[in-house]
Length: 264
Image 1 (spheres, rainbow, N blue to C red):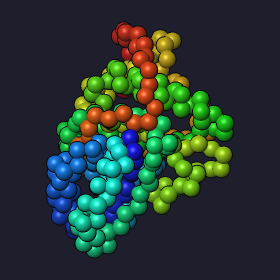
Image 2 (tube, helix red, strand yellow):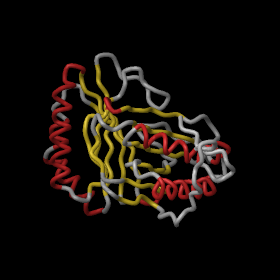
Image 3 (cartoon, rainbow, N blue to C red):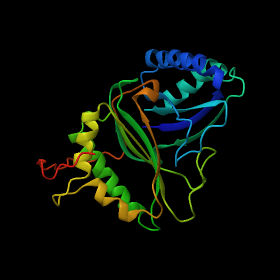
Image 4 (tube, helix red, strand yellow):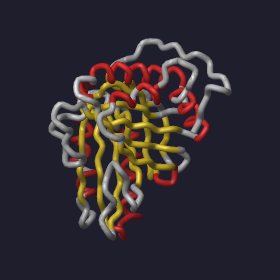
């Protein structure tokens, strides 16, 4: 994967319908004309905000827009098309603003995306930001790669699951990481409630086998912050099969039994 971007877009409340219609048209254009676009999604934020991002301003609607491109050529192609069409359209929304943060190959630790149409049928999408204790980033990233192996092999209903390392400069979207601390953005999407339960069962297993939910918390230096979106908040989008960052080796996933499988 060459580049991934998360963007927050603000428009006036009365322009919500017009904006979402333009999003739908843009997704169709990208799907048809950009085969190496691996992720292109719009989700609507809740007016109450979250621990990840503040609540939208009064009389404004906010959206998160996700993009990922498999190659530098695909990224450049999209930039050219956007300059001619999408960015010009986006600027027509009075009062519209956008802030973004991008990740290049060395910052995408590991991840997977799968072919999926994103709409109101998607069960859940979540964005998490977390900070590691000083000096443990490399060890934690090793566990991230292993977790991607678990998701790749054992969770066919997970269309997006990635870990990206934030730069020390931060961005206009998210605050600057503390000096000497590694910070990460984690994206996760689950196609159905059953797919989420299957993910939770593997991540939270209590039978002594490796489990993500018990592995990563000791590495954290601050509480995790996040924002979640359920199907009705997904405006439109798609993901395509792609590997992000490091490629995990084959992992062993011992069978789950009812007394150790712990869905949410």
